[in-house]
Length: 300
Image 1 (spheres, rainbow, N blue to C red):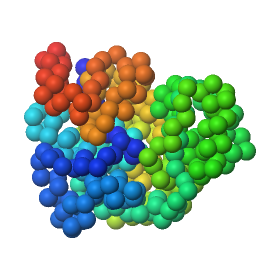
Image 2: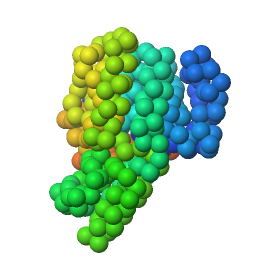
Image 3: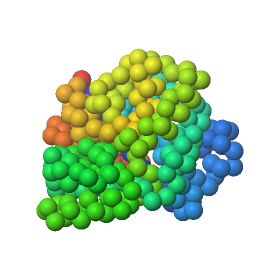
């Protein structure tokens, strides 16, 4: 029986999310980012993709390392979109300082490509084939396959609004514009992704100490160069979170711990025929997470 650490993506951020973090990750971030680190979680900063992604990276690494300090080591790590970066850091594949520089660039590239008028919309209550039919002629794209009937689309505000209208008419239970200001995980970001690929050539990654499970392919990656490709290109690739959770379950992961902020991945994990326990660290508390992890470790 194994432990899975999960790391959320954009849309879970909130003002103040970096206050009272455990460990020294904020000091490490300041050493790389300077004074910018102190305002990343302000309401003003969180209107920008760069700040959101950096904040999620810092929070994920801080809480993941806190669990490690309490002798809770993951057997598998997986992150949704930007969450792949703290996952790679916790797995020992990517240095935290390098991750900070790469994520800052990632956010800049994405925002510069689409400064306004684009984003993501979640559609609940319809299957993939139903949503694909609604996309025909719309200039919107499939972005995330989060659950059987939770599909996220990407595109311009107008294109997404039209698809959302069609979806509700078709019987969708909800069509919700997410707090993401760029059209992630589709062909619209193919060019910025290639620029990030070039930046990764100047960074050395290592073989991970635990299984790095890609949220884009649902497959475990061990080779450093494949992890680098996964991280660089995931902004332009469809998120296949349901497949990733199923893969973790098949690898006998029986405790999924979601790093702050929020609990979106915990809900999605439970929807994917998860056979173990799944909890949000923020909502359940670290003591509960440590207790469940120790209990599972004792059963091995």
